[in-house]
Structures are given as structure tokens and as C-alpha cells.
Length: 113
Length: 117
Image 1: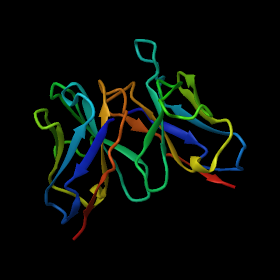
Image 2 (image 1 turned 30 degrees about the vertical axis):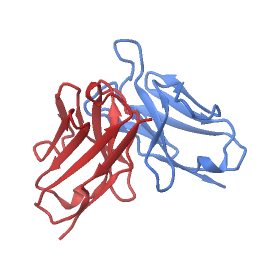
Image 3 (image 1 turned 180 degrees about the vertical axis):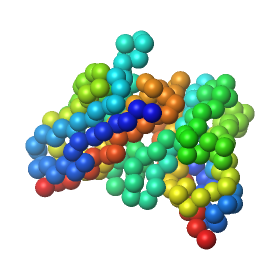
């Protein structure tokens, strides 16, 4: 199974400052069609997860443009250009290239400093 | 808009069974693959099972042989039959939409399951 490793696991950020979360996979996530099936999810306290980014760099509808995804192969990054209070929660990366099984990172807890 | 509503969660003793349901609306259910994903208290996300639009099923090793995913396209409903439940199956169970298995799109609100004597 593909292991997804996120860092950091805890991310204190000052409001208005940028934030960055790394996600590394134990195998390349590039599928035979050239696409990396890497998703990013946000889980606010007490809520279900919500997808932010799909195919590594595509922002979902309704997701603020301060969120961006990048990366290829085994290294991926979620960036928030300016953190707002509503961004508090846990962020997960997920790979679907080598399913089954789908595998998730451990999660990164973003908090306001 | 896509709506997924889970039901059937509760408290059950180890070794017993429970069936979760997920009522889907807002999209063509019969054309979509569907997932179950769980989250143990204070822990991260764990994929449980996936069913393609044609009924093909896939399972995590941790539940294979004990859980069965199924769907009723006439009722727009997804199911998870959980047998031989263990304490470590305690979690919130989410149903979620997927395509061919490579992605997860929308999530339900979750159904809590507690396995305890």
C-alpha cells in the first residue's frame, strides 16, 4: 500500500500569514494517463471533510483562491496564501492513483497562533 | 446539490452486526462509485470500502471478510453491512461519492458507531 506522509503534523500560523503543508508518497502518484490522483481535504472542527484540491492542483468550486495545490511524482504541497480564522482545522492529503486501497496522510492540524 | 445522509449508527456489543445506510440525492446515483470512509475518535481518516456503479466491490484489509458494501440504485441508497464487529471498529462512518475509485468528491455528515461491551 502507498504510504502518505504529511509534515508538519501541527501548524500554528498567525492570521494573514502564509501556510504550507507537505505530503510525500512512498511511490510516484503519476498514473498511466499522466495525472496524479492526489486530493487535499479540509476538516473543520465538528464537520465532515471537504475536498479543496483534486488531481494535485485543481481547486474545487467554491474554494477560496488563497488555497493552491502543487507537486508531482512523490512530493506535493498545499499552500494557503493568507490564513484566515475559518481555515482552522485538520488537512489531509489522499492518493487514489494506486487504489485499492485509497490512502490518507496522517493529517495536519492548523491553528491560529 | 449533492446530499448524502447516513443512518443506522449506534452502540453495539463486540461480535454483533450493524447495517449503515446512506441516502443519496442531487446526482445520478446509479452512475457513480461510492465509498465508505471511517474516522476513529480523535484519529485520522481510513478508507473502508468502495463499490463501482456496476456493483464491483473493494475492501480494506482490516474489514475484508467482515463488512459488505452494497447499493440499491432503485432507492438511491448505499449500504454497509458490518458483521463480527470489534472494539477497534468504533468510528464515525462517512459515505462519500467517488468515480472510478481514484477520487473522493462529496461526503455525508457521518454515522457514529460504538462497539463496546
